[in-house]
Length: 281
Image 1 (cartoon, helix red, strand yellow):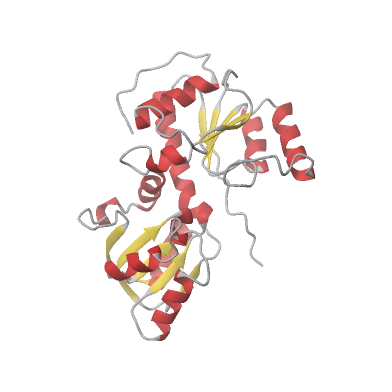
Image 2 (cartoon, rainbow, N blue to C red):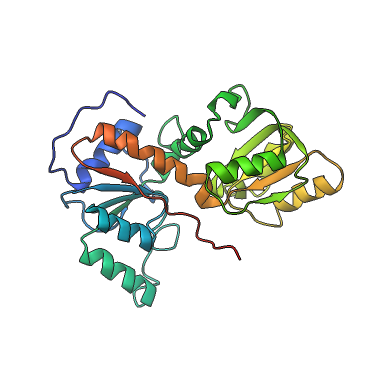
């Protein structure tokens, strides 16, 4: 992210901060149609504090109130659909309760998704995950895809333990043998592992890059899961490790917080972890 931004005085409005983020990171807005919109609240609110998070769950909103903040920058939706549409839920009890709480505490939420992924030369969600993992040194810049890593030789089981520790996961799903050796790995965060509209994309990535392991966010069991499971059953040295959407993308919002604190020093900035939505029995 840009390092030469100017300091800004206090009494900033929500829109001032949005404009500054988009200018410093992307040289201004890039998309006419985007989900990067204010989903609740007002662009004219004076900001008392900023919270960054993967998703504005109710617990994240409660923590925002506890911190005395009133502006949440979220990567994913507030209202349960990709475009944050609310025409379907105007009489829904969950929507109404969440909206009432947000309104009572004068919270504004802005979604920072499209510009964070593709608004500049850097995908800051991937970048945040790599910072969390310490994997920048393994990235292969000459590969066709910017998601390919040459690792010190390890095993699927050792990497599963590594990710559980780094990303604070209770459990992790794998396909393949925990004892399988891994040298070349690829990462597809969030919905990238669904193919981004092209179901066969993850399989093509694995084949043309000669990957031993694919580390994924979301999964569909009839696509890349089935492909890697067949490969494993036929004796190929291939495996998959599943992080889930939230765990694979949350670190991007974690590492946004110190950047904001540096570039908007007059306003407190806090990262609040949305955490996995699942409990494991």
